[in-house]
Length: 301
Image (cartoon, rainbow, N blue to C red; front, side):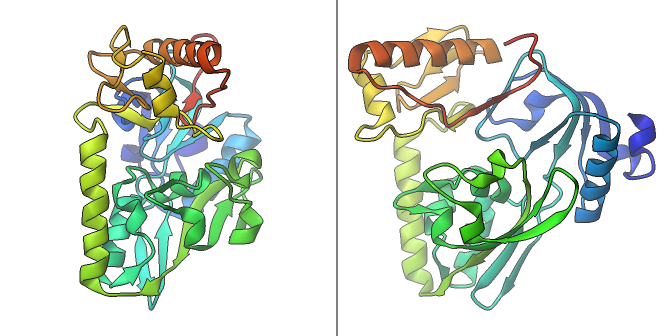
């Protein structure tokens, strides 16, 4: 592995047996065999190609907001995009690299009196992660404002894709299906009024702080909204609010969240998810599909 990377990155951008819990919002997960943080598109292209040539498995992470990393860790190479965080404004267009926080991009839009990203002011994820899952909140979603995106293919080629090419749906896109890596997104916004944009963002922030368990580490909303229902209400009505396995607990503030209240493990989380799914299915006949992504070595939970 060292021979693959030594001519590509500075030594301080390469970490061996790095605890991935330091890179996730849940604050859990085992070690990455190797974790690297490239700072340019060219670096990630070269790393990707070298890893593929040497049959080294690759995992891409942003800031781990909707991620559960297994206690067994992640094999091969983990690429963190946190240094790819440049944001540029040109008129009513914002270009943001994948590692930029979508909250920060919404604040830049506010400062430029650009409207359209108010819904994103409380989404604790990166641009890449938000685009991959077509993240949304408070009546808006990424597909409402996305113009185009730059992605890296499995073969290490760069593609510029229009919004229509990405097949954005409810919490999904073609990105995961095709194993693309988002490197940059281009948002098309509308010129607005600063105070009106700020008022909407302040209201969204107030609602988020009021309803979500921000006082504990979590992976955000665990389940997708099933057609005709709300996942949180189904879980609450099933009497599961406050249920705890190990250090993981169904939030007493919002049943759609699982929070790390006491040094939870990934197995605590996944076991609790399975109990929730089984109980809701038995009581209401509804299959809860996870929004959170579970990754890691296959030999353990």
